[in-house]
Amino acid sequence: MIPSERESREIEWLSTGSPNPTVRYRGVLLHSPIDPIPEAEKIVAPLVSSRISFCLIFGLGLGYHVATLRRKLPQAEILVYEPHEEIHQAALKAGFEGWPRDPQIRVFRQMEELEDFLIEHCIYCASKPFPTFWVYPPYRSLAIEEIARLDSSIHLLQIRQATNLRTQKEKKNLWLQNILANWPRLISAPNVCQLKGIFPDLPCIIVGAGPSLDQNGPLLQGLQGKSILFSSGSALGWLKERGIQPNFAAIFEGEDVSSQLRAHKSNDAEWLGLSSSTHPHHFMAVMGKHFVFHTEPWVAEVLAQEPFIPHGGNISSAAFTMAVVMGCNPIVLVGQDLSYRSSELHASGIQSEDDEKVRQFRRYALPGQKGSVWGHSAMVSYLSWFEESARYLAKARPDLLLINATAEGARIRGFEEMPLGEVEKFLEPLRVDIPSILEERLGSPDVDRRAVRKRLEEIYLLISRTERLAPDFLNHPAGHLYQWLMQGELTMAEEGEARLHPKMVGQALKVVQILMEKTEEREERPQKLYRTFSRGGGSDLP
Image (cartoon, helix red, strand yellow):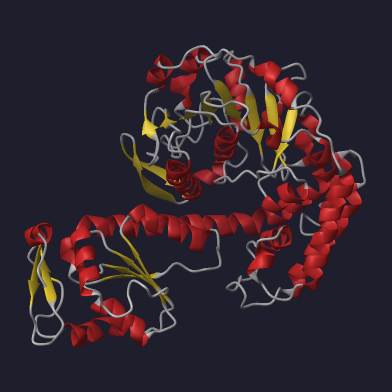
């Protein structure tokens, strides 16, 4: 085997006392100089004895240990991360048995690609545990920093998974009650799909309520008329007290936080976005312009009001997605600290009922713009979502510029860091009449209630007739509703291998029945509806 000129600088091929070669990389021997296969069997023995089903191996080498583990545990799913391109090419030349054609073995060259795989399979499919992480011994001296980085990344993703599961378990019933109570309004209100592509290549600034917002307040005043200002609900009053008029504000809390809307008056210019699962009292507090958006795919599909709005758990992430839907470019984050400033969670004068409780949460060190910062578990989850979204958009929308102009706080990979004053320099006054465009686009939609009811009837029939979790079911709105109801409940089995759970089937059918009845109703008083569905402290679900 003749090494290439590039390989010869880093890799030295060596013959062994067997037909199986080995290599030395940067002075480190990757496999036994006598016979790599018996050595591989000895090294992976602890993994084999523990009968692991999902494993992440740091270090491919020439693949002897990976092939041995695959042979010993034929049902196991094996992920491999190889940070060195030279070793990866050497493994391809060595061509160990079955790889890379084996579907049970996935080799990753980029850590971000591996992170996205884990997010898709362990966070969005939250019942799947994270893989056992194991470092192939020679790499402990070859890739010390990379090992620490991957270990930290997995730890933060595990925090995100645990945070999501806890939130789903605690709040899913509340969200469902709210959707049922809000349904008549959701059908008839203007919705976010009417804003799709409305502002191509217009800059949008997403304003969160983080502590650094105090530093950017004066600059935000000068950005009115140069960008679309999209405020979180918690920052709305803060902005308007300082004479800053946003174009949009949004709120999606399931609990009653109507106090955030006190700054909104019937003749104000901003349009308020309300999520389908927000508290019904928020609809009562809105006196002027508003539209709805859906964070649950099945709701958007039933109402034919797609796209739904993916988010990372905070309203700024939902506003970010809406800015993408509207076609805005660049998208700028302000006040998105995702960390504490001392013990402060928000800008001056902004408070939340949960602040004292949140201050008691465990804190985690995060990479910051000015050194390490500290954030709680939900902040870790928000940060992971923004970084995942940036990676996705870098491929789907390579023209889209993402800027983090937050004055301090956590570093968000995939966002260019830029002071807000520098952002202002390249923004020019908008040449479009934003209020007029919104007035025209966000009129009351034409609603075909018969079509909504027909979709609900189809969902009812499919759920009642389906026995197994087959892909056709899971990709249908009926499957999306079923999976949403399963959040934080029972373990979801692999597609096609498990039956639908009777308890969840019964609940899904009851939900659809109620929605069919409410589809015929016009707007009712949300307060009365909410009392109907929240008896017994929120546990009295249909």
